[in-house]
Image 1 (spheres, rainbow, N blue to C red):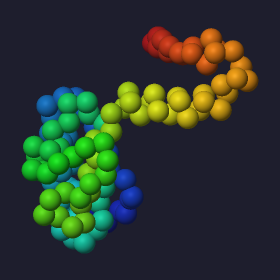
Image 2: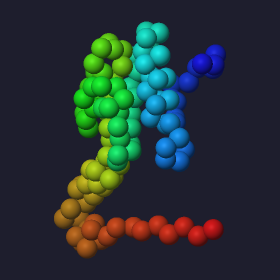
Image 3: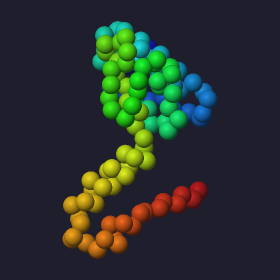
Length: 110
């Protein structure tokens, strides 16, 4: 670990490079040091349950055997739809339903 203090650590990279293993090992080490840690996965094929040997769902829960470590699996598609509903529901009855139901599709070109 470095001496730099940051409230967030991100583990990114292509599949199969050990992101989950490194994130879990880091989270366990920090929890063992007395820090309260929330380990978050947005991987649709998350295997945090297997690595941590503890139930990890879409609700924050304590990791078995580690008082300071909590984990959650966030489904990005479900979260995006929930956000969309929170944003558009106040507009119901104010603007046409067709406008609310529109989905923006971004196309990237390089």
